[in-house]
Image (cartoon, rainbow, N blue to C red; front, side, top):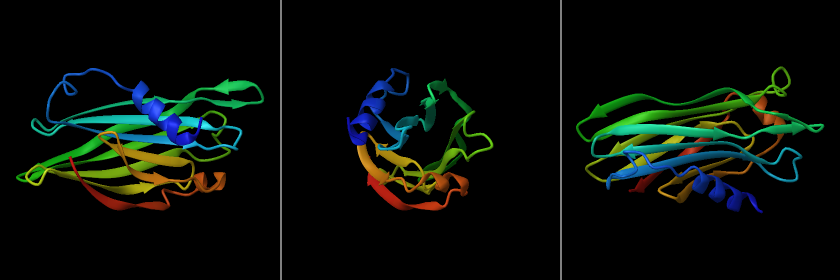
Length: 176
């Protein structure tokens, strides 16, 4: 299965029913990190789903993390932090930050965390959302808005985990 198909499968598996998903004015933002083949640790490492009710300005976040297998031993994710923070409202809309971080015990002391910070701004008058941010150069990052891919970054190399969010995501404004 190619990585795009895997990311689509992960997004589908994260589907859940909540009070916000029942609203007609919801927007879903999804962020997936995945290590690509031929890396021996290929697969989804994290997936964060943010459901936004644009009428009430309520925001819900859920996430899942993958595992890492080294020499036949499977390590669960640790050092996780997946949050939505800094919600600010004004007359034309609202904005918030999406933060994601994960690592495994195998990477502690040997490498950095997989992490990202996104800035999300809704203009409820124009019915557009603007997403920008930064992330590590490894692994691959996917961002979807209402099921449509709005950003993809293909991983560089493992040493890019040692940096501090060195990749700037271009600003993307999309109608919702």
